[in-house]
Image 1 (cartoon, rainbow, N blue to C red):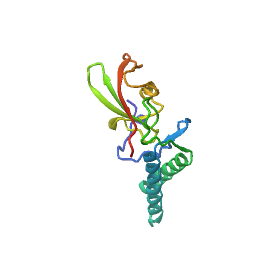
Image 2 (spheres, rainbow, N blue to C red):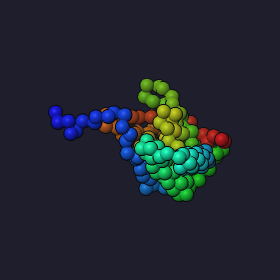
Image 3 (cartoon, one colour):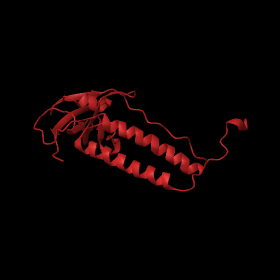
Length: 167
């Protein structure tokens, strides 16, 4: 094997990665807007601290570059955010900001929250509103069965309940 394609130093820092917005509207919940504001504040403070250090070695310069890229992304996301405040809404259909309980075919009940793209966290059940699963749930009411297409076969779910948390 040619050594030209083998990374010699596995501890070498990688290049900074630029985040790109999805191009879809940036809907956010009130919690998502607060999270974006906090993220911008944290990154701005981190940038100031990195700029304040006297010696700029390569790892620090890379951290600064990544921080600046992230700060630019989150500032832009905050500026283009569209607040959708459905807290406490008394609607029976699934909309942005809803907490949706669904029953899987095996009887397992799970709860998902429909949120903005930067708020999404699949492990916490927080679904990006534009994801296939959220798309299948949007507009559904309790008792409705939805199908989510997957490569390995469709997933079928029944909407059990829809609520709009007040926080």
